[in-house]
Image (cartoon, rainbow, N blue to C red; front, top):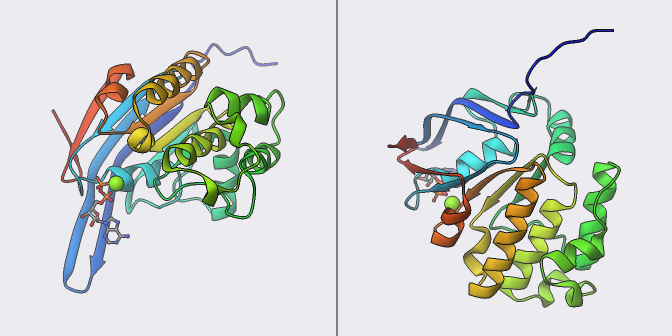
Length: 227
Ligand code: ADP
Ligand code: MG
């Protein structure tokens, strides 16, 4: 038996991420050496003008895109430059993702979307689907299909899906863009509660309310952090 007193690894680390896109003659440097470390229970808000690299960063952190340089680790395990099936497994186990394109499957009800993610993550002690939907305030829409939801309802259903595997890390792109005052407050209270329970979060946002609940606010410009 080994009795080691090592401190647990940060929930999420990115070391000098680079990402380039080439279209014909044109070369875009979306990320130019971006590092990040998010500890258990920490909420980091990422702001920055359009085109500054926010979505590219989140995609790399989620293992949905591969950086051209640098590495991403989640819960101490390397996520970047792994085979796709391994990345999918790490994602299902550790990460909740909500992009603007949405994460709801069209042919499943809201409730079944949440249940599917729970089944794929096969962890014990997940919150029930109905409880999650109640937490985000759309329990009455549990039987609806995604196309029957308003923008704000879809965003909240997407959040329920992103939280369904009780992720170590939550990554969300403009989560509250479609959500108004009172509901935004409720969603932010839920996020804070989840962070207190241990989830680390990176929230891309333009919302002051979101930045206000964050432990740190970071700003990207032209693929780099700005002081
Ligand atoms: P943000 O989310 O901050 O608006 P993005 O990460 O979407 O910024 O984009 C950063 C830069 O990378 C932009 O110049 C964008 O046009 C470019 N970009 C992003 N994705 C692609 C892609 N798949 N192909 C080519 N260029 C891309
Ligand atoms: Mg974006």
